[in-house]
Image (tube, rainbow, N blue to C red; front, side, top):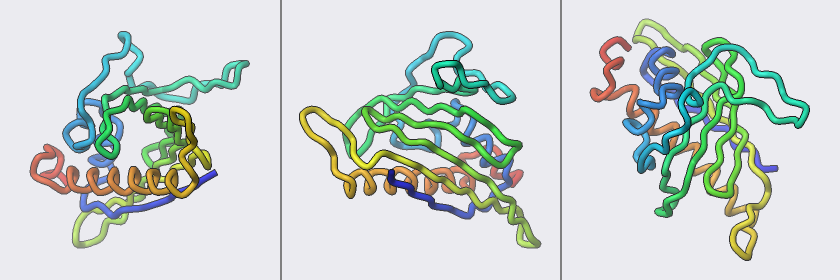
Length: 174
């Protein structure tokens, strides 16, 4: 398994960062890789509270699921982002699928406010398989690692830019 963990310090409140991550309506505003939303059946994209139990099959229900047309390395793919567990306002656990790639995701938020203002340390940990099957071939470990690092780094930078920027209505509060 490949594990990548990166962090970014964001000059914004935890609530601002939390909302950017969880509100599907905000994702296209901060993520320029999003090409458009894929509508899910009614009610399947709501944010619910609590933990869903694993079914007998081992499948964990999503508490929030969103599907997007997504550009990765210039290639349009389908991205499905699911959150399976939310722990307080500081930890999200879920899964991301982009085309045939699947990552387990853990997002953490930690307040680091001081006299200079509110700050939030946003952490992202992604765990992926060593190889990814594509048509007729396997993408090797180092290439998978590069893709995972690029995804996490770009996501953290874009969330920071949005939460600190003037286009975010919460930026004035932060």
